Length: 135
Image 1 (cartoon, one colour):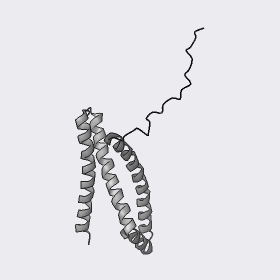
Image 2 (cartoon, rainbow, N blue to C red; image 1 turned 120 degrees about the vertical axis):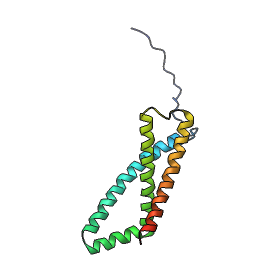
Image 3 (cartoon, one colour; image 1 turned 90 degrees about the vertical axis):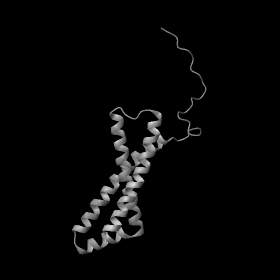
Image 4 (cartoon, one colour; image 1 turned 90 degrees about the horizontal axis):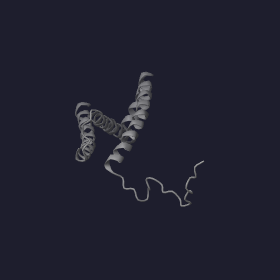
């Protein structure tokens, strides 16, 4: 029977040590990708509820329109729009990674800032187009 060395009584360090951890763009975007996925699932439920209200008749339509055009409703729609584009751009980035592209450190950071900028730009363009097209 072999003897194992004695186990140290010193407390094991936690990894990562949150007091000394500095969030990086890659970790923040990874967390945001997951959060936007959850947000989009909640938005899909809201969409179904809104369509159900509209399909129920004129009173449901009035309620759904009032909810969507109220300041909190518009804020939620804007956040959902950004979440959609953030998740979409992040997904495209992951597809590029699956193809074996963009793993150099400079490309990782350039791609990260690109999806942040693209999600904001695409959201703004969609809202601008909607504002101009919808009376």
